[in-house]
Length: 309
Ligand code: 3HC
Image (cartoon, rainbow, N blue to C red; front, side):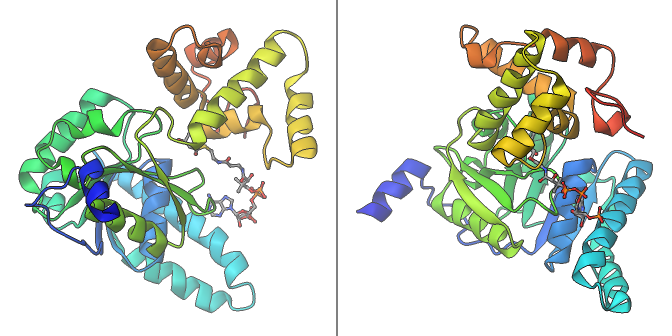
């Protein structure tokens, strides 16, 4: 009975290909998140193709992966630097790069998108790939806040579509949110769960609701810190120190905003505010809007709430 209920809830499709073991992974988007996911997937033995619009972007991504791997091995192989270097090279060999999104999809068990947070662009991308990818290929999005159901709607593989939401920095953060829509098949959901475990991550199951679990709690918390500061109830430095030393958070909310990217936070909160304008948790912040308008996006471009070298 439980099995039957699950299949109904997740949208059973008799034509669905079952139990895909994900070995060949295509990651679209060579930014911080895409490169981080590529790194972790390659380090755990998956064949990864990282796809973006230009060779230059991809070369930068691979450089970033190499740098991050070196940070990892510095600790993991502290007494054996040669074995560490060997590990770095072995992982890098598992990462290919390509600018041909459609050709790469043809050889992939999983197509995971980590591109700009624009629904139309994501829908167009998946709609195109749907025609080229094999039947068994699972599609997934790493969106921070857009509904997976809406992204999947441009494809005919609703049963083989889900969400895999990673956290920055991907090599360090142990969690992955696995999102099933009402149409995601149980087999697809299980394949995604198993994939995250094969990456050495801990998955949690999420519904396709705004912000899933982490961002739904984290983003309003960060915005509340901004409001506290805007009202003059604490300097950003004091609020950061307070949350680190008083609540045990690794970063204070202003540091975390800069780390995640102010443009990303603004995108998320604006989207939620449009959906539920009266909700005080989703109220916009003037300070955030001003910084983003000035092009101060945080750590990634040198200045946000703080300045970076
Ligand atoms: N790659 C590899 N190793 C890394 C790394 C990376 N990108 N970042 C940190 N490390 C490792 C390294 O071993 C590093 O040592 P090193 O500096 O000698 O190389 C070690 O971690 C310690 O790093 P730091 O000295 O820079 O500082 P911390 O000890 O504070 O750790 C941190 C850094 C793991 C980022 C920690 O501050 C942290 O957990 N911060 C909170 C991050 C967080 O909340 N992320 C979630 C954001 S929300 C999100 O991503 C969702 C999205 O949808 C918005």
